[in-house]
Amino acid sequence: MVELEFHGAAQTVTGSMHLLHLPGGPIALDCGLFQGRRGWSRRMNLSFPIRPGDLKAVLLSHAHIDHSGKIPQLFRDSFDGPIYATSATCDLCNVMLADSAHIHEEDARYWNAKRATSQADRIEPLYTLADARRAARNFRPVRYNRPVPFADGCTATYIEAGHILGSACILVEITRSATMRLLFTGDLGRSKMPILRDPANPLPEVDYLITESTYANRTHSDAPSMKQSLVRIINETSKAGGKVIIPAFSLGRTQHLIYCLSHALGDGSLKRLPIYVDSPLSVNVTGVFKKHPECYDKAAEDFWLEQGDVFGRGYVRYITDVEESKGLHRKKGPMIIISASGMCEVGRILHHLKNNVTDERNTVIIVGYQAQHTLGRRIVERNEEIRIFGTMYKLLARVEVMNGFSAHADMEDFAQLLGPIAPKLKGAFAVHGETAQLAAMSAILSNAGCRNVQAPAPGEKFSL
Ligand SMILES: [Zn+2]
Image (cartoon, rainbow, N blue to C red; front, side, top):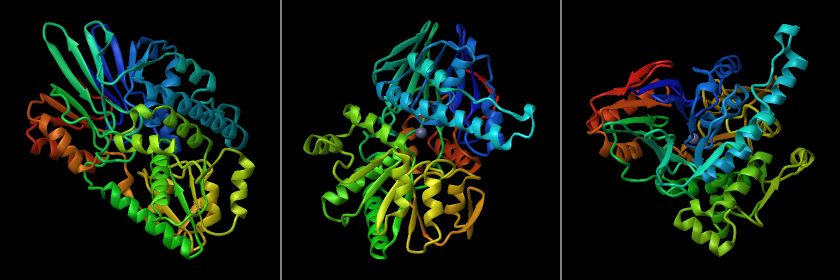
């Protein structure tokens, strides 16, 4: 008997992890970190639904931390199995998980030094750099569209998801007397997005589907019109003498922005101005993007062959040094600063926001999803005052929200990609969404002919 158990990203958008209980032992689809309010996320992150040592393998869809960020913790807690992922995902995780370990170590150090009220209140980091290094040794790169045996009678095939570099939907085939097929979308991307290939279409027909729902209730602007809007906003801000501050995830969004800006500078629509990418992680991740041109779409490949680089060589200053980062505040005049974290919770972006939100000439451009209770969400909601490092600042800068840069499928993409496979599904599970998005995904699949759509609660189990 095969059972599917939902642990993370069940009725929420972070902590992606689903367990497939097979006769030979459980395997995990993703192993992501919960992100959000400190107390809640720490509580959620401290435990696993099973003993990690019992787990046989992890099938990882892509390198975003909410899908991969608890992998080092598995190793800390005695797991020693393989993690299957595409080659680009393996390289990205190498960088992302080391960075995540560093954040957890710093967080524990800060808490113990400044906030802990007693010896009992002291905390250990969720995991350390040593755990991340151990995890890195167990990554097994797989190629797209080649079935990989991962357990007795079971294969996994990684299919282009078009979401970020290396992202995949995972087709799991379990053969006993008959073959049962399950497709896990991971995060699905969109067609015509910069750099990346489109998601595979058609997707394979399967018995069961686990699908993300992040933007199942939205329609995004298309990518070319987003580039035009971005350029218009930057030119307007620049004309007013202001700075453009863009909080952006280090992985994916930062590279998409630079690619768009490189094009706009090349075709003359964007006036030349200083562009800074101020985040050591973004710099490292961009290095991985440069290493994997085999994942680019045709347009990016052509641009790469022509220019030798698609990430702004000669236009963009990449900053890793702390002093140089601090020095940006003293520079006058229009400029673009792209910095992390994408939800404005930690990292150098906080300094840039603190230094710039009270000046109405400046613009903050929000280009990514902002979860509830984050500073990014408060900026999107245009709160009159926002708290940064414990101090309240008036939010006088212009705020522009551009969801069209999303690397997630929207309702039309979902209908197009999942609609054709919906009628033959025995069951579909909508995950990775809040209540409204899960309801929208249920409607998309039901309208396309799927008669059994669930939005599983954490801990819920289903026999397949
Ligand atoms: Zn993702």
